[in-house]
Every structure is written in structure tokens, then in C-alpha cells.
Length: 467
Image 1 (cartoon, rainbow, N blue to C red):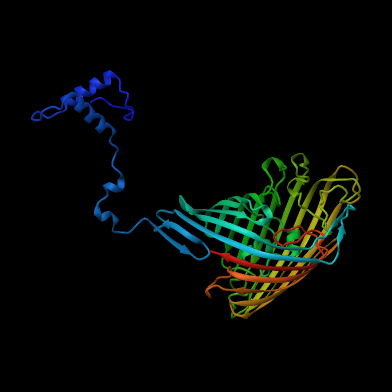
Image 2 (cartoon, rainbow, N blue to C red):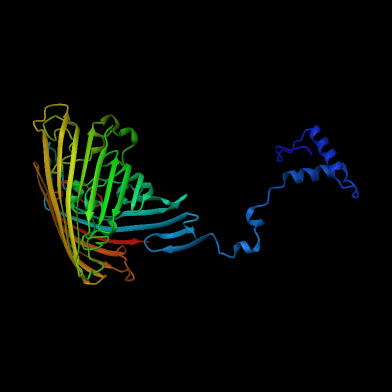
């Protein structure tokens, strides 16, 4: 019988029609009368165009007795899911979760203006506003192999003109027990409070010192894992300290290498610095981190100092600003070293934690004489808190400071959290309130609601909802 290579073509040549007629006539059994020529041709075309039966239609009744291949549901802190009922045999899973931070911020200034190290005077403004600080959609799961997982975060907020961007994404493979390698965009592995999710902060947001010294998200290669139950480590090799807001053509040819390690010698410390679990026995965590980055000028792409264009001096002046270190001179390149040391203790609802920072800016390259070979800054934050009602209400206090050649910056805060979860390990859904006395802010941070030169009283109230 002739073979039809494209059964959906209906403009059949005359020769093919005659072949079909002949085949139809000869294919009839001897005791069956042949069809008329036209009907025989239609029957042959219909048989050629008939699709192969679907596998699920061919399955027998007993093939479905073991249950469906996939299940739908919801899981706390991961969200809605669709996943295989046997993740080892068919390792496909999709989780969709989200988080929303709705915030009120009020700031009453003590000074009308501030002057940076380049001699530029800028106003300090009062503020009173409602905004959405973090609106995040999280997508995660496994695919292809049980050891291969993926994670994506889409983020939007009022500060970013309500535009949604790809905050983070990676694919991670567990090549040994408790050890994963990942490629994508994630947090540069330095500074403990930065590595702690914003979901679990003691106050409304991170401290002034953390915002000054910390890195951010960057694309690169990551390695993280655990050694037993007492040690956690993270390592990263990325495009820079903070590059997630930079287009690829704006980056220089330098990398950032970073690593962080922590120890829990008395048992699992858990997420967050507050003692939500109200440990019956004390638990301790201590650790350290280090990051080294080298950047060169990319003002041709709109980013002076390349991927380190965010760096500021201890009075809030941008390092890339003309005149920051010498009149009329602009820094074109710098090498940055950031180190931190941290410790925390939890017991019976009480908790205390702190982190000490050191930063070195050296190997300057500039378009003129600077008169300075290196700059050293240091700072810290220290926090303490207690649950007045276990897993419901806690009160907290914080001190934070940044010091350097250009001056000092301070923060003194007090606040509380009301957790309205169902009494399980729900530290996410809460109402937070804090009041902060800010003295000469050295940072620009939309997350912490701080601007360079801020000097006054900052009040923040926030509702956080997550699933």
C-alpha cells in the first residue's frame, strides 16, 4: 500500500488519488464487495490520518488502582503545590508561595540639611508615607532528578515604582549529603544579618550597620551545606558585591569571592534571632564571614566604579562622587574587603545577638592625586529581646554604629512584634512596630527607610503576611 508522508495535505496529486483507489480496491477480502472508487479513496485517507491512540486511553482498569501520579495541596511556608506522589521515582514538584510587607514610615528631622565630604549640602526632609516594601512571589521545586532543585523570587515594591523584577533565581544540585552547588543569582555570602531572611528580622528591618557594610544579590556560583548538626557554611564567587540592578554590559572584569561559616555547639539555633521557640536549654551560635571584591570604573555605561558604585563613606558620601576623597578628583577603581564576626544566644524566650564589622577600601585608582592610600571603617549592631507572651508578643531593643575617617553614624531602636499565627512555627505572619533615633545616617536603604544625612526620629509600623 502506498505510504502517505503528510496525511494533512488535502491537495493530493492525481497519481496519488489513483494509487489510493487501486489500493483500496485490492485490499478488500474476497468475500466482501469493493467500495465505490470515491468512497474507497476517502476511507484510505481517513485511515492514514487517524492518530495513534493515547497511552492513557490504552491503559487497563487495573493500571490506576495505585492512585494518581500527582497531588495538589498547600504547605505552610511553601504555599500551594502540585507535585508527584513519588518524588524519588518522578521528581517533579512546583511550589508557589508569597509574602507581603505593608508599612507606614514617619520621619521627623532634627537638622534641616547635611554636608558631605565633597562639600555638597543637601536637605534632610520629613517623611510620612504608606508603602509596600516587599511584594514577593516565590516559585520553587524539583525537576529531572531528586537532587536537582530550582528557586525563583519575583519582587516588587513602592520604592521601585511598583515594577516587578527578578530578585533571585538559581538551580542547585546536591552532589553529596548536605552539600549543594548552585548557579544563578543569590545573596553574596557575607554578613550574618544580611544572610538572615528579611522575614525573620527582630525589628522591622535590618540595622544601620548591616545596611552600610553588607553586600547584596549577584549572579555567580554558590556552594553551601552543613557539617553534621552543628556547622553551616556558604561560599560564593559572583560578578561583584551588588550587581543585580546592573545590566551585564555595565560590569567590569572583576569578581567577588565570599564565604560565611557558623557553629551551633549547643544544638540547633533555628531561624531568626528572637527566641520564638522559647528554648528550655540555652542555644548558642557564633560565626564569621569575609568578602573580597575589586571594581573598575564603568562610567561609560552609567555606573562609576562598576559593580561597587553603591559604596559610601562613613558620612554618607558616595565613593564614586567627584571630590569624595580629594577636591575635583574621582575614584576610578577600588578593592573592597569586608569582614564580620557574629554571635547569638537564646534561652527561655530571651535572646541576644550582635555582629561586628570591618571594612577596608584600598588599592585606589583615580583621575588625580588622592592623598590617601586606604580607608578603614568599622561598626556593629547589638540586639536584645524577650517574649512577654510565648510565641505571641515580644519586645526588642537595638544599638548600631558606623565609624570611619569621615565621621560616625548611630542608631538606637526599640520595638515589638505581635505574632498571630496558629501557635506552630509561624514567625512570618506578624505586626511589627519600632521607633529609632537616627544620628547622621551613612546609608541609603529603601528597605530600612534610611537616607544619607538623616538625623531625627524614625517610626515604622509593618504588617507582614506570608504563605
